[in-house]
Length: 400
Image 1 (tube, rainbow, N blue to C red):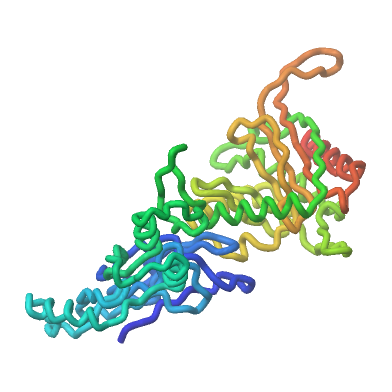
Image 2: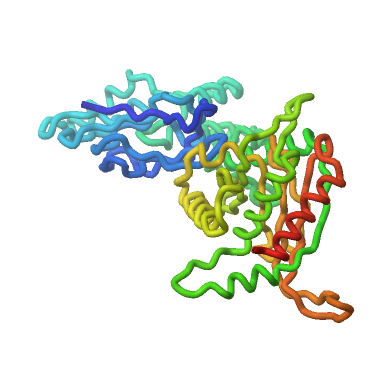
């Protein structure tokens, strides 16, 4: 029996997901738990596995289409069924028992003839776009799976009539249009959400920044003292531990603002910004204050690896109370980060490198780094922010 594939519930607060790409095509076989399609939500990008083994018989949601949770996005046919393309509906295939499928020229002709009386399945986005521009959908040859008319088909038809000034906001993710000033393409789902969140944060928080220079020589000595087969924690792991301990001592930095209320969080959950080829995500090290440097290092490496392979769960990017971003890994000396809402502070780690410093009236080379704390002045005063960063600096320079 055919099996419906549903848009999964990727977290309690997530009501919908956007189809980013189909990994399998109609007619292809798929194993149980094999990646079937990729989605993007408010929290994470993830590959969705097939619930059963069989043949992808039908695709019901186009790339770029946003679908409510629990909606049917595809149909998987059983392994004992033959998939026969059905151009009468988008991304569809007719399932018939083995040996019954009619693949003769006459049979194919009858199938195509029946297509003229079968209404084509169209997404709400395509219907709306067609209505906005007065497009007769029956006049368009679809390029989607099974002959489905896609947004790109409608846009191409409209542009062919001379209406090429459609706003890029209605372009599908995969569409790229020519422009006199160069190549123009729509933002990805993740990039749009990053843009929205950054603008929201700038409008919400009263951003202020303070910068401290930290001597990382002690941490370098601790790392050098590690002997194989011991794992050597990264500098970021030591910094995260120092931050977590300071958040316990100064909980206002770990709090957040909700209207005219201050929300004090019971846990210290430190988000670590991870740069991806297609955007940025912030998985969270939960209860970081209770972890050792080694535990934090293992957690950071695991989260970063799974973030880059799209294996994170929504819970692993939710519940952060403070964020650390590390552009220093790419050579940036220091930055002025934007607060990750609804948090009240974010730490930016600059490049850790040897610089000339004065020690006991002598100029010497030391392994130094700039740490920048961005904080919300609605809740955190400058003196408190400086005391917090001084506490982090002291821990790193005297690490036990």
